[in-house]
Amino acid sequence: MSFGLDNLPYGVFSRPGEPRRVGVRVGDQVLDLAAALGGDVYAAPSLNPLLALGRAAWQETRARAREAAATGDHLIPLAEVTLHLPIEVADYVDFYASFEHASNLGRMFRPDDEPLKPNWRHLPVGYHGRAGTVVVSGTPIRRPCGQRPSFGPSQRLDIEAEVGFVVGVPTRLGERAGAFDDHVFGVTLVNDWSARDIQAWEYVPLGPFLGKSFATSMSAWITPLDALEGARVEGRSQEPEPPAYLRRQAPWGLDLTLHVELNGETVSTPSFRDMYWTPDQMLAHLTVNGASLRTGDLFASGTVSSVGQSGSLIELTWNGAYPIKLPGETRTFLEDGDTVTITAWTSHGLSLGEVSGKVLPAT
Image (cartoon, rainbow, N blue to C red; front, side, top):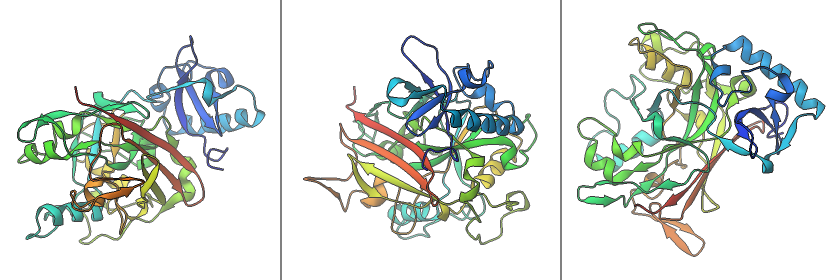
């Protein structure tokens, strides 16, 4: 069921000597939509032309893809294709939406103060990342260099297990986004790699910069919102009640469990349903000032952490104080050669694929 006809996530693939084109995953195969359905939108080298068509076209494509997949025609084994970044990323925004993650970092770095800053319960805190360094799963990640405060390779390279949301329908400058599912095409997995030592030195007073901008990995597959209908849940209760523009109009919490693996060993299984801010609220906040959406925008949840399960090494090791035990070794932060793989599943057995990356030495 994980990649059956109830799922059908979208991606972009190619075979040797052939151009990139759009496909959907069916088990361990990919359905060639250009061959199965015809049309330039499916022969494009990214999903952006399809994303721009809007919800009615997305639903029509999904219905036609399900019919085509059921015939067994135009299916290509995954082993015969190369998977590519599925979208041309227009803008990238990273939020900070987990109560547990924000509280853990607050206790860690401000032990004598309240864990959360006063604004945290009033709005989804976020920052603008670097779209040009978003890479597809499987792309090796070079250890970044920077000031920490002495200059050199990061000694505290970390992960952030996140859930990402891909925008299809844009907005004009000066207008706010409408209903979440009128704009957002689907859901993907994200690892927003973090150099904690570089970030700690530079982030005051303006926030993340070089400690975050060197690489963000995303899955090769984007699961359409319609496939996740059965995973939708009410969002976590919020106190105080947020402003009117942030009040939820529909249940857009998602019942997902993430699995974080380090060198093949599961180190954490945080729950996305426990996130304080839901993706519809993130989208509303992103555009409330009139900032425009573009087709191919990617916004992510920030680290997914829940009670007893964390989506970052800085939490799992409490900033290095309690190393993770692996077979024959331990880790506080990532070492060269380490591979991190993040997967996610719904409670009814759908997979969101994976996002994976191997750490290469600094240059």
